[in-house]
Image 1 (cartoon, one colour):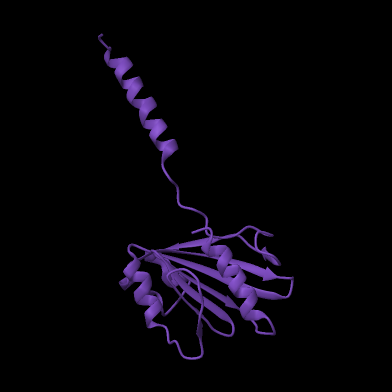
Image 2 (tube, rainbow, N blue to C red; image 1 turned 90 degrees about the vertical axis):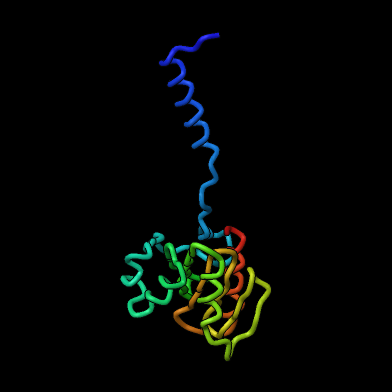
Length: 161
C-alpha cells in the first residue's frame, strides 16, 4: 500500500494534533469560590515568571531565583467575608528548590501539620511544600480560628496540586 506525500503529511498532522490533546496540562492549584467551605476567591490569579518575580516580592526574589523558581502564581481569598488572605504558589524546576526555600524559613513559633511533603503553621500563615511547589498562605489579620481556616484553604490547594 502506497501513501502519497500529501496523505502522509495529513496523517502526521492528525497524529500530532491528537497528541497535543492528550498531553497533561498543569493543574490550577487555586480552589474556586465555594470549593473550600467558607472561602471565596476574590480576584484574578496573577503569574510572575522568574525573570520578573522582583515585581511581586521586591527584595526577596533573588533567593527564589537562585533556588530554581520557574514562576509564582498568586490569588486573593476571603473567608466568611471577614478574613482576607493571599495564596502564593511558587513552582520550582526541582523539588530540592522548594525544600531549600522551605528550610530557610525559621520554624520558631510554628507547629507542623500533615500537609504536602512538609508544612508549618504560624499564627497568620501556613507554608508547605509538595513536589516542586512551595505554597505560602498569609492572612492579613489574625483572630480566633485563623490558623484552622488557613489550614482548610491549604488542604484545598494541596488537593489540586
